[in-house]
Image (cartoon, rainbow, N blue to C red; front, side, top):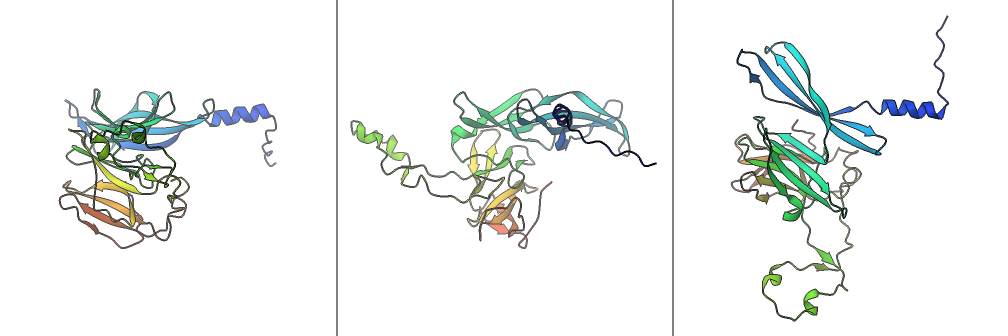
Length: 305
């Protein structure tokens, strides 16, 4: 006799309860395997750092949390593996990346103040504490940092002295033709400092800037940026062709250059996320001379991971 077919759930409360139970199952977002460590007894182990996403119905948002594991092995087989401690929510983290040695970790964090204003920080942590925190928004060297999977990256140099990331190109400020200049209301005496500040472009506040479409809204002209860990200085790399948007960048083996994928702006940007068969190529920009050259043929599909 055939087994009876499962009966559909019609009670609303049961449906809600089932959906809530299913929402507790997290989805793996990323994983990083740390370097091997040898104990005093000759055993080897490594730490695995993972990030997960989970739907929080009460807060009506997707939350991200981290979970760490330890794996003991003998190069060929796993002797023991297990979780270390409890899971912990990651608040405001947009990107994170451990250095090659595992001794440092970079975090891109977004915070919101009481006025609802968003600020991005680039942080560097060691094993014990935060050793560097740079307010990228106040520096005003570029726009928002890209955290998406299409363009975004956070890459350590092999010397672990610099960080590479992608951000929106800084646009000149704009204002209305009818905006009253504050200097015209003053005494008319200038100390020379105001003259050095670039003047806003009048009448361009509603100029349309084409972006890359769904999932990449407000991302139009990305630039390559490098942070010096020691000094905290931010540099926007020159020499990138104006007809491509760089992304998925990483350092060359000797740290003298950067390799990236460039997507052509022509014939249009819109819809890249769900229509990725666009003209693209692999590029290399030499940091010593500023020269950029093409390394591959067109229509390249590539990801450094």
